[in-house]
Length: 293
Ligand SMILES: Nc1ncnc2c1ncn2[C@@H]1O[C@H](COP(=O)(O)OP(=O)(O)OP(=O)(O)O)[C@@H](O)[C@H]1O
Ligand SMILES: [Mg+2]
Image 1: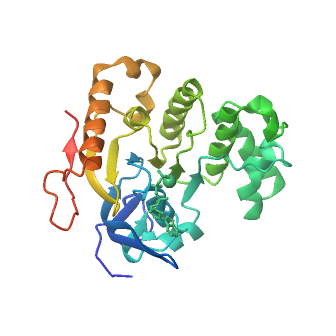
Image 2: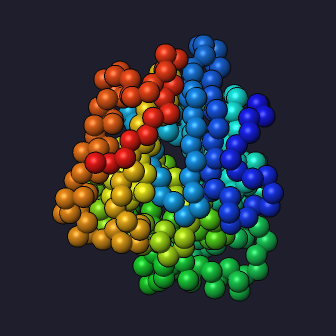
């Protein structure tokens, strides 16, 4: 791994450090079929409390990037820091929570016991666990379902349990990989509004992988557009839609929302058409940023 300097100060994992700093990241997978260059020249910074989406065609490396930030994969070269510490240290510090497309709940545990699982694994006592799961289920609107089992819940409710579980240890960073991908459109929009509220209430930074242009625009402070072969960042769109806590359903009919959607769509099309974004270098790497118009 390189020793690339980053803007993240190496001191304590303090409030001043960005939630995520990725610098000069490359990732190549080597299998018996050959080598896949999954990510190249990724530079990305996510501020504390910021909501950033990753969007791009299938195979562009979104999940790989998220997994590297979560220390579930190692970079080939480059550096990742989470609140100023290394990714492995952040994992030990439980600095982030994770939620994936499948809620991944344990069917034999109640809703409350699923939410409490990370706390149980880390030795938190029974009474403290129950206090925390009670407040988290209230946060995600499932107080009446604590004693139910996952298969008694709808898909959207299961995903809310998964989000509550990801928040159990009060992470300052949430890593989410298509968490609403399996939900119908109506439920999905409701979950987006819920997530906006929850992220505002907790103050957690969010790195959110999605295929949905409108979802990315609605939720994000910035949308990072990626293109494949090898996966790289082509454009970053700043949505300019105000604090995430103000993302209510009314925003969906606001012209500023449509402008953000258009900016993300144009960024995606430019990347997928193989058109280099402005400032793209001959090595295919681009650090260009473009604010929403
Ligand atoms: N463990 C692995 N071993 C080998 N190749 C991998 C591995 N994980 C991912 N890849 C390859 O890396 C590339 C990026 O995969 P990744 O899953 O990150 O894409 P993605 O953007 O999340 O796609 P999708 O939108 O379909 O989820 C793909 O070419 C994939 O085949
Ligand atoms: Mg993926």
